[in-house]
Length: 618
Image (cartoon, rainbow, N blue to C red; front, side, top):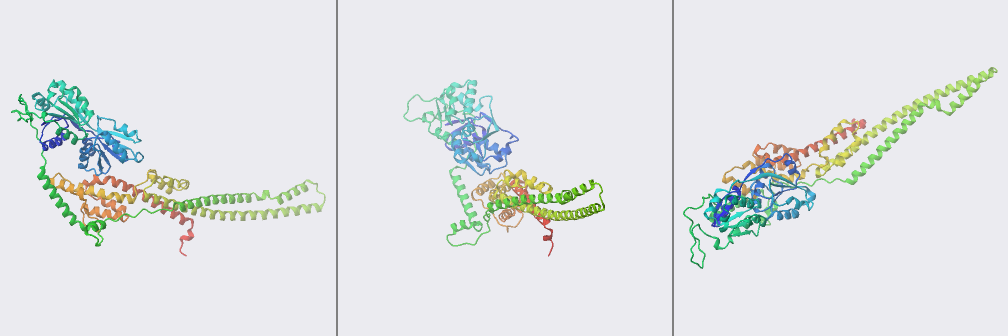
């Protein structure tokens, strides 16, 4: 049968190849041209925060690959064609819904959790259906980005017009409501509506078939399964009476329908890239199997212990140099830390009360000469005696004695006041040192909590807030707290998670380093996607990308994130796309860890300054 394809050129070529393999003759007449659009400025941030990407077309997969370098984000595709396109572009986690937008929404409900972050829907400017509304009703946050535009043709393509005019078309295929509506409009404008009477229309879904109801097609059928394979199956199920040539059919009835030869002047020829064929596919598969088996045998020394045990049987084999499982993050005794924090707070309050009491005692000592009861009583007696008239010599002697006694008392009280001041000063210095020691101990405890948060990848805003009362009059401490503030709410990626994510990053970086357009490299890329053979270990020598990745992974497993980052940054530029996101997370982890280390060092310095005698050798 002669099958009209109205899809854009890329999709039309793939469909034409499938039709040729089934014995049909495709006629390509694209109704749209696809234009990839520049992503908006907020696309990168939205993609980084999203838990998954939704794709409703193969063009969306291509536009996403052009707009973003990240390939590890989970992708949910509407069908197998879209999923295959995404996998071919390097996306590592792709799941197909195998249907339409409703099937994609159902897949998202099964695989994803609204609480784990928003979703991104990459689409064209014009979309069919309300995917976002269907998911938002279930609590998902969906943000749609139009990264491509399918621009309609102004007139019916020449191949379609000629095929309809000459009656050489048997089937017309439609893969979207917009394509069907555009075809109906252009056919009416060209005056070829009646020419559709001999043509069967196959639509990918009932929605795509609906705009064709106004045209007099021989039949209009929606595919049982809304996929490209479903459309092909519907074409295969068409009755033999639809199969025809442009010549007049015989009026003599026949028990068996006849396929007439094509007309002398067929429709415009279509150039189709043919596949390898059954024999070629078998040979290619055999070669690929031999290559995979040889690679597996050669790489046997680098397999994990468990995999080699399965291959070689129960006989134990020497342990290979493979990436070790990262040690679990240390677990902090939070109850002990909370108790220590409470104890520090109680001690600080007690010290402040004692300092205020000493200050009050010293102030009272300063005023002792004017408030002592004995002095006040003597002063009153003197004043009474002085107001009396001078009676005799004995009275004068008594007054003089009283004055001498008062002077002695004043001297004694002054000495007592000076002694009290000295005692208060000595006590104040000791209390201040004790207060400084308590502050330093509190900072050390908080630094330990922050370090545990970094190791576990959890937010640490609450722990960082404990330093707020201690920042006053300590510029260094304030500088450290300010540096940690941006990462406090969300935390940073833990060293364990960095090590877990690194193998996928290394795989992508190695593939980018080897990628080119040759058939051999594409075949190698497919094999690497299946087998993922890569040397690991700190003893892999050389300056190749594989050697540096191996040493970086070993450094990560040993806990040396800084060394791993330095090795990854030394890779050639073609690996930047694969490593950029991982490096950003690793740099954030290192910056936070350096700040926490500075905090601990500053706390130790404070503790030493509060007890200078302890710092001197005995």
